[in-house]
Length: 304
Image (cartoon, rainbow, N blue to C red):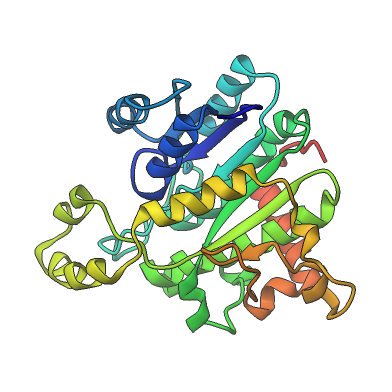
């Protein structure tokens, strides 16, 4: 039984890990706000979550590629609650069928906008609710695939150059940014915010996601999907991090320079501290990314 129910907001709660995590947290009695992009999929997810929920979850609509939609979601939550205990930035786009770059109405490439700028703006907006919680927690999501790219860097001078685009490059570029923002925000809020960034391995896609793929991609994904981790396993990781009593600082060390100082923020699916790509430990690069992200998202005001 939950003695102190938490207020939790989770993006991408309509499928995959996000849906399962929302289910588990609602079953445990926490007050879950499922942030989804479309009303239809959101309502379907809400019905599934609430079929077993001890505390009914609520739906919040937000398209992370659209600044006005993000602001609307922030206003919605500010009108519903006076604090937010946990924000889980789970939603991401990794659609291999998007072979040519798409640009949002705000002028940003879709993967960069949805997977980095959107969560950045949302977190800034909700920071004013997080700061009111007794033990606020922020959970973001990166990818184990970054292990194959130890020298990956943010393309600071090519953010608006679409010539280097591929769905794979764009996805991992944004995921590196998620780690770097997690590091930067953790250092800005030591003692005030528990920050975690999960290195998610390949995760089994839901049947409807597989069915929606083009025939060739579907054939490629079937064996890969069979070997991938079940989303329920990662949902347990999200739940554990959302409710943990310790913070990332329990793993930080005074040795090892920046890597020691930041140890415990970047975690694998078993909640073990792991090493991020080297660029994520570059303090100047992190500050440059923060400044560029601030500018690109309209200079939002943070609570910290």
